[in-house]
Amino acid sequence: MIKVEGLTKRYARHVAVDNISFEVGKGQIVGFLGPNGAGKTTTMRVLTCFLPPSSGTVRVGEFDVLEQSMEVKKRIGYLPETPPLYPEMEVCEYLDFVGRLKGLRGEQLAKRVDEVAERCSVGDVKSKLIGKLSKGYRQRVGLAQAIIHNPDVLILDEPTSGLDPQQIIETRDLIHELAGSHTIILSTHILPEVEQICERVIIIAKGKLVATDTVANLTSRLRGAETVSLEVTARNGAALSSGEVQEKLERVSGVSRVSSKSARDGALSFMIESQEGQHVRPELARAVIEAGWNLNELHAVGLSLEEIFLELTGAPNRDVVAPHATTVG
Amino acid sequence: MNAITIFRKELISYYRSPIAYGVMAFFALITGYFFYIAVAYFVQIGIQSSMMGQSQPMSVNDSVIQPVLSNISVIGLFMIPMMTMRLFAEEKRTGTIELLVTSPITDWEIILGKWLAALVLYASMLGLSLLSIATLFLYGSPDWRPMLVGYLGLLLQGGSLLAIGTFISTCTRNQIVAGVAGFSVSLLLWVLNWVSSFQDSAAAKVVAYMSVLQHFESFARGVLDSKDILYYLSAIFIGLFLTGRSLESLRWRA
Image 1 (tube, rainbow over the protein chains, first blue to last red):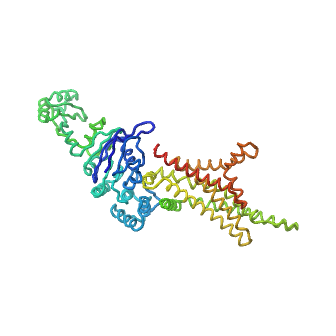
Image 2 (cartoon, helix red, strand yellow):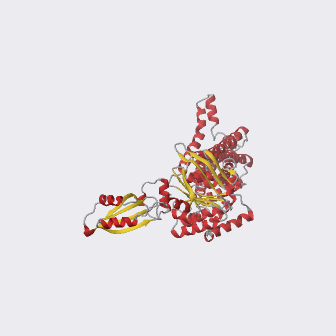
Image 3 (cartoon, rainbow over the protein chains, first blue to last red):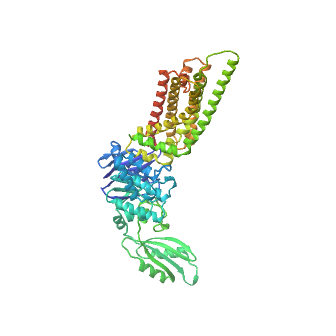
């Protein structure tokens, strides 16, 4: 459905998107990940014909975004990062306006306005001014305008940003519902969201494509090594030097890397990476006990999408990743 | 057809925001004042000349309507930037321009729709001044034809300044900047012909010809001059053309 080949977008001073290629099949739902400034929004803007590509070809269906932009525009629904709303318009006025922009008229238009208002649950605020709506409602009106002409392709730039947890769940459910009949590309900074709703992930960093695969494949590809979190204290409250412990742990067979995480109230904690295919937890426990220290904690840290993501994009401080809360949009 | 969609949306935006009412109220106040002055002066001259036993023919058209229309054309210079400043600057600031540009409509439909909506707002403002002038028809019998020509001139002049203001609005995402720049350009276009008062070179004539108010004088007198009509039509064309170019460049630079 969407075919991007060698897409490059240059601005005056920098390259925002550098030679990216990917394909999205009909009816697929694809997550677009990358740190801020990675080029996600730029790529989306090229797909929606807002920006022309500097080089490369982008096709939606059988239409080229440069040569046949009118045809592409008819087939794409787009929700930019900030929903394009007019605060002085009423919700149904606005949906009517967008419907007309997309080429709907007459009975069909009225029917679609009702349908999308119902579907995005904004029916109860239809005659309210958009300026008076809460953030969650605005986001849903934004989503409603994106699907009003029943487009083949939906492009959603951070559809859940700024919503409260309840609204996020509702929006995700809505996107799930839409998935069957539309091809969806969405960017997000909430990684679990991708795990939950997307079939495939496209990860870009600094304008370059880093990985494109299914979520399951990405996880298994990187799960070869084990990461272990460990905390020790000295017996009888004696002082314990971090360097000493680290040295000891590094000598355990199968360990590839030990990094000190924190030292609080005499308790030292470490992140330990094993070599490929090695299970190091029993050996680590024995080493700690034999050294005469207390083993407070020892557990394997699963490789979440966050870590895969950080791994692939080469973000620096991977030790401070809190599961499920990191923002790396 | 899509231009009408944009046009309707712009009208909603205008009449839901205080800007339309502010501009119209301000305009009604000033034109009302000018009208009062013109009529009062006319009456005074009339009384004086009859007391002195002279019975010179006096024309309401020449001594009331014409000066009032000329004043309106100057007021337009001040009001029009306020009407056009938000047209594109606001869309750029809030990001709604992305919706317009990614919809299957052409740039021309967007521009035409917006310009026409501003023109309708301007025309409805002019309509207010007709209220005061209508009282002249109650108490006298002015000739309506030169008046009609005068209003046509006002519309043409307004259309030109609106087109230029629309262009300026595409250059920034800040309404105030667009307003101030639009006002400066309007002012400049007004005073350009002052150069001809002390210069007689060809260059001075060309510069003076560019002056937007100068071309209104014939309309105010009720004279339809093709040279002036052409001036305004080309100003409208140039303004809208530049808007189109600017909108296009937005995408290459954005």
